[in-house]
Length: 169
Image (tube, rainbow, N blue to C red; front, side, top):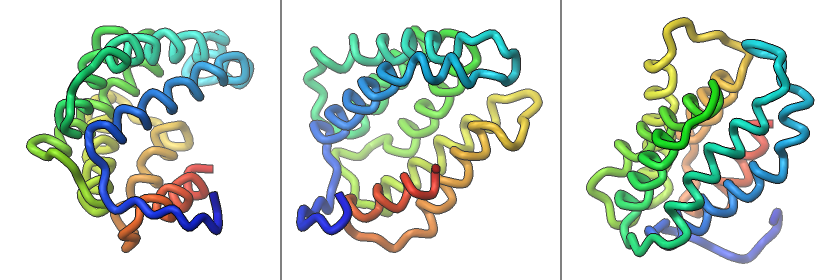
């Protein structure tokens, strides 16, 4: 999308819902690759499968959802992830989403700064949920990406998300 003329200055419930569904679809398509590279905390090759099962629970909740605010959509996704969490990756995703939902609580729609603040809250929630956080894992990627988000001055979601994807890689 680099060089795109599309501009998105706010995220409402509908946009967040579509984004979450797209992210879940992408995660499911990465199942085999995630299983292949799974080495921590146990190299048992099931991270992709566990993540797929967790995001499937989110999809099953989000597809029929009529929620209109980002707060409702985020809370629904977080609750679905908690109920459907499988393995360490499912637990980690659910705790990130719980914090993210907490960061969006009370909002119908958000601008980039409010969204970035919610990402940061999600990263904090995940770290707080871990008994022995290990750096150099997905935890570090999430933390560093959320930090980059909160340092961003982008007012448009398109360049913001392009930047965050680069940071995460």
